[in-house]
Every structure is written in structure tokens, then in C-alpha cells.
Amino acid sequence: MITVSEWTGEDALLLRSVKRESVREFAQRLGIDPRTVTYWKNNPSSVCRPGTQQILDMALTQCTAEEQEAFRVRLAALHGETALGEAVAARPAPCMVVSHKFLPVYLGGTRTAPLYAAGTLRPSGPGGLEQRLLPGRHRSAHSSTVHVYACGVVVVHLEEHRRVESLTELAVWRYQSYLKDRVWAGQLLHELLEEHVGSESSAGLAPEYVLSAYELREHSWQGPGLETALQLLTTPSVLVNRQAPENVKPLGPGVEDAKFANGWTQPEAVVFGGGVSRGVAGWSGVAYHPQRDERALTMSEIVALELDTQALWALSSHILHMIEDGKDPVMPEPYGWRYLRGAYSRLTAARPTETAQHRVMREAILATSELPDRLRAAQDALRDGNP
Image (tube, rainbow, N blue to C red):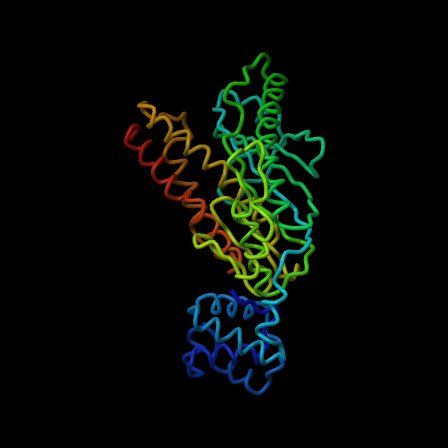
């Protein structure tokens, strides 16, 4: 996906020429006054306003693959660059990332109630779920927190800063650390329950999975190289051998080089962002790079969405597991089907004050997580059993 770091009138007119649209047609597509297009023609070096930048970002993402390729080649020529120059530069390189890990587990209302009472009140996230915060006590992480949700779910959040020589090195660390992280999280929850409840079994406390979100900070990639890096950060499994989970290894020399050389993409991943930020959402995680901080999404917005997404995933999974075990799904009030319906509506409905970047990010993460479908299935199951 080609990106424009800062749209000028000349860049916008280039997009219009690729679309082969008249001034009026192009203005109508963008939802702007035709006089703005005329202004670009008279002032090609003018920098577009922030709102218009986002509109042009969205228009570019909606172009066909052929139109995007034509725009990429013409844009490179317009700015005195070679279209091949970026491809040659696309290769493995050192980078620094901020890793966010989410470890969710359903404990039930009885066990979470004392933890919830002991936690610090925290503002609700995008899903509108009531939550409180406890310290995570991790010894080496940059920060660690325990998010206790009133509905009976706990999500452990780890923030770790990693500087690596290659994305393969990061992928090996990621999967090797997952086993240790799950054991550590289970032990942490056991200690918290012992502290706030008394004697407590550790059975069922270990999270079933870990989901990662990466913020790419220091790097040297541009254009297609950056796109490939974000794709590989989202789906690092293509770089390693995971047949033995306790001994994850690189697939071999040259694998990462080939991915960069060929511009590898994950077909099921969804790209979000625009000229001021780039992001990729996939089944196993999210990768994000803000290109201009003053206008880009913040990583905290992505983290807030992922916390609620993983909490609702754990809650809906608990309900669906009851059905699979041959039990009638029952949840205590007020966490029945109406609770899930409200969370579903809050997560999927657009907000009047929501920026285009935030909306595209939200839709990408929800689509790749498949949470909306699970919420609907859990909601229907509860409603059928408890009309």
C-alpha cells in the first residue's frame, strides 16, 4: 500500500488523474467543494489541511490495485525518485519496538469481586466496560498492569521495549516468551487471589493465549519496506519454526530477506491508517507506526481497544464453552445478553467525534479478531436460555 507523508495540491491532482475524473466528479468523491480542486491547480505546492489529508488518505486506500500502482509510479517520478529504488532498499534491518501483550482469562464474578474492590478505578474503554486496575509486579517489563473487569474477566497487560537486529529475532523472542508469560500471569493471579480472598486454587488461572500489539518506533524502512515490516510484525509465524513450542527457532537464513525482497503480505490482514500513520491488523496481533505524532493515532488508543476486545473475547468464549460442554449458558445479572448487546453496539457504532483514522483502526481490529460474530453468538445463546 502506497502512502503519502504529506499531501500537496500536486499530489491530490495526481490522484485525480489516476482516477480519470473531472473536477466535479473528484470533488464529489472526496466530499469537498470543487473550488478546492481548482485551488490545487493554481497552487500545486500548497499543503492540504489536516482534515483533507485524512480524506485523501481514505480515497487512496479505496483505489483499485491498478490505480494504486499507477499512483505510486507517477508519484515517484513526480518527486524525482525511482520506483525501483524503494524495492532495492527493502531488506531486514535493526529496529526498536514497543511490545504490548494481552493475556485474558475468565475468572467469574465471585473470584474477581474482591480484586475489583481492591483495584483503582479506571475510565471505561471503547466497549464501555467497567474496570479497575491493579499493579502487575513484573520484574523486567517496562510496565505491567492487571485490568479487572466487573463482568468477571481479568486482562493482564505487559509493555516491553525491545531493540533487535531483525524481525526474525523479535519473532523468536515473542513465541519463546509466551510460555513464560502465561505461567507468570497464572501465578500472579493466584497470588492476588490469595492476598485478597485467602486460600485459592490456581486451577484455571493461566490465560489460554497471548495477543501482541507492536508499535514500531526506530527503524530505517521506507515505502514498501515499511509495509513489509508491519506485515511481518503482525504475522511473525512465517519467520520461525514453532513445531516445538518450548524451542522456537528461526526458519533459516534468507527467509526474512526473501519476504522483504518479494514484498510479503498476509492475505487476511487488514491495513489501516493513512499518510500520518500506518497499521496492520491480523488474527495474531497488530503492528502500528505513527509517522507524524501530532496528527497520528496514539498507541494508547489501540491498547484501549485491544483491552476491551480481549476482555469481551474471554467473556464470550466462556459462554460458548458452556454450550459446547452441554450446559445451559447462564450469566449473573447485569451481565446477560443485554450487557453483550450494549458492548457490541458501543464497539461497532461510529461516533460523531471519531476521526477517520480511528474508525478505520477500530474496524480493522474488530474484523480480524472476529469478536463481533462471537458476541452475537454468545448474545443469542444467552437470550434463548434467558428470554
